[in-house]
Length: 199
Ligand code: TYD
Image (tube, rainbow, N blue to C red; front, top):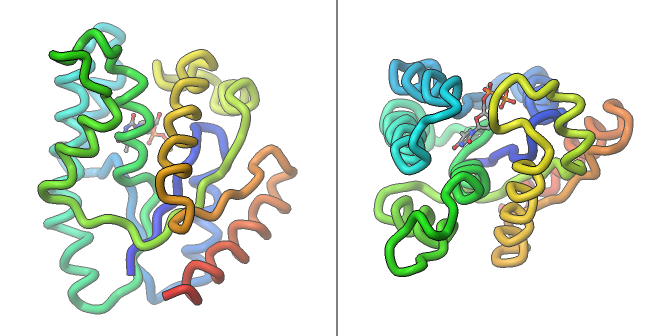
C-alpha cells in the first residue's frame, strides 16, 4: 500500500511524516525530491530562478522514475507499507503552476499534460493526506527560501491541489494545517488510520 503526504511548503507536512515514521517502524518512509543524483539535479534547478519550467518538470519526473524503480516498487512488491513525503501530486500542483498555459502547444492544460506524462509509468497512490493551509501562512512559515515558496505562486499551487481533490475525492483526507501543530499531528494520525482501514 502506498500512502502520500501532500501540501504547501510550511504546512507541517515533513513534521507529520516524521511523527508517523516514529509510529510505524515497519513501514518504508521515503520522500521526493530524493537524495539521489537526480535529486541533486532537481535541487540545482530549484535554486535557479531562470530555470526553464519544462526542463524542471522533467528533472522532477526523472527523479520520480528513479524513486519508483529503486525504492517504491521494490518495497511494494515485498508487501511493505510505503509512506512518502511528496509524490506525483506535487508535480501536478507545483509544475502545473510553473508552466504557464501559453508555454504548451495547442493551449494544452499543464496539469492534464503532466498527469498524462506520468500515467504511462507511475504507480498511483492508494491514499493521500492533504495538509491544507492558506498560502500566506505557508509562505510565512516556509520563510520563502526557494522560488516555490512565494505566496502568489503557492496560491496557484493550492488551486491545483483543489482540482486534484475534486477529481478524486475518495483518495484524499484533508487536514486543516492552519491549526496549532499538535492538532495538525492528531488529525494526520487519525486520517492515516482511516486510510489504512479503507484498504
Ligand atoms: P524541499 O526543500 O525538500 O522542501 P520540503 O521539505 O518543504 O518539501 O523541496 C521541495 C520543494 O520542491 C518544495 O518547494 C516543493 C517542490 N516540488 C515540486 O515543485 N515538484 C515536485 O514534484 C516535488 C516533489 C517537489
